[in-house]
Amino acid sequence: MMDIDFIVTWVNMDDPDWKKEFNTYSGKKDIEKNGVIDARFRDYGFLKYWFRGVEKFAPWVRKIHFISSGTPPEWLDRSNPKLNIVRHKDIIPTQFLPTFNSVVIERYMHLIPGLSEHFVYFNDDFYIIRPVSEERFFLNGLPRDIAAFLYNPAWSQWYKTLNNNIEIINRHFDKKEVLTRDHDKWFDKSYGSKARWNHILKFYGKFITLRTPHNAQPYLKSTFREVWDAAGKELTETSANRFRSVTDYTPELFRTWQICRGNFEPYNTYQDTKMFPLLIKSGQAIEAIRKQSYSLICLNDHANIRNYDKVMADLQMAFESILPERSSFERYYNE
Image (cartoon, rainbow, N blue to C red; front, side, top):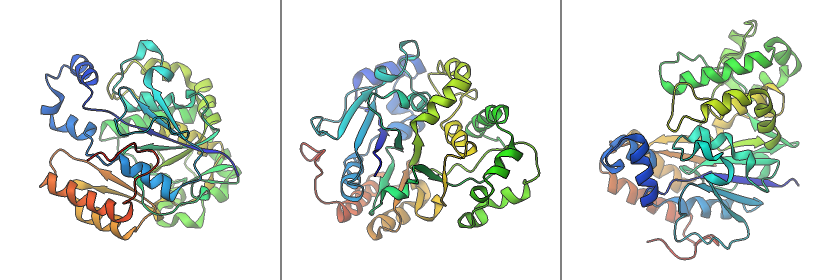
């Protein structure tokens, strides 16, 4: 069995130093009065269920690397031998700090001391809610993933940054050679209709954006090193973006590079993973947790959730129904 680590990033919005720096660099008078920013960073106390889910449903994980710019939650037991607290300053060059840009933080993950070659990256809104095996993320020593093109109209900042990634990919990979070499991986039957653009664009000469399922993403650390060797100039220059920018390169650059290199095993991640926008699907999210309908779920926050306190309380009750026992990562209940 291979060693597999998990990485999770988290923001302590209650850290006064973090608030002060955010307000200083963003020009905001108070982050808590800005609904959009509040929704992106606020913590509704569910992080403990992330740890409980990992311990109960993925006990095989070797190490959890917890990345944060400020103080970890008080209840987190830092003495747990499976936990490694990582500060931004431990991996990101000083000239780019402080940063509030998640894609900048993510591109330096491979510099975490002691990180295993095989690791899975989680946002803190992504939870494991039923048992998963190592093979869910890695098979034959390679990350499991879906290689499927997706038409990208570039109508938002996020989609524009995905096009930035593809420009680098097309400079380093020949699409015809890649699809010929790994034909069976790109046209795996498990993808179903998710890969219809693979067939439509089979003879088109350039790569376009791949599907980017919001997922707990498996990576090889060596992929990060390879991408940095090839695109270090671009990644370094855009590391100066303290906030998200249209010039950014996102983690999908590393994922797409990994796929184009052939370092993956086909897997339709949509079959056991689901994102729930809480603005419109809070009820479905609560039911999915209680019934453990998926292996992994994402709870996507929004500033305009109606009856916010009740939604959060119902979600907590759902988590408690499947993860009532305190994990070894908790010093005490955070209630």
